[in-house]
Amino acid sequence: MLDTLTLDHWRECLGQDFRVRLGQEAGLDLKLTSVTPLGADGGYRRQPYSLLFAGPLTPLLPQAIYPLRSESLGELEIFLVPLGPQGQTMRYEAIFT
Image (cartoon, rainbow, N blue to C red; front, side, top):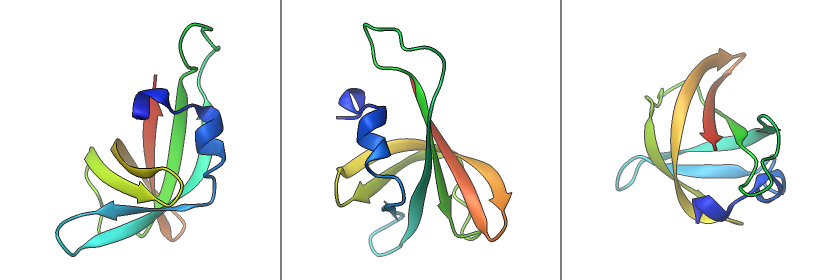
């Protein structure tokens, strides 16, 4: 499913919470805060883009693939990279090419 999602799909989810499953019972919520196009639209493939998520400062999620669930997109496995704190939140980025 990830290969069919475009900028427009994600823009519709701006401000929504995505639940990250960390184990059988544990999890945390990340809010989608930014959807940014990267480079020019190639025409034959989707345009590359970046997603930024904000979550709690702890626990810090190391760079890895995580299952994220949202009401509108269902469950997706996304590679997240921690970017560091901003105010009282930790920022995470996912890049799609």
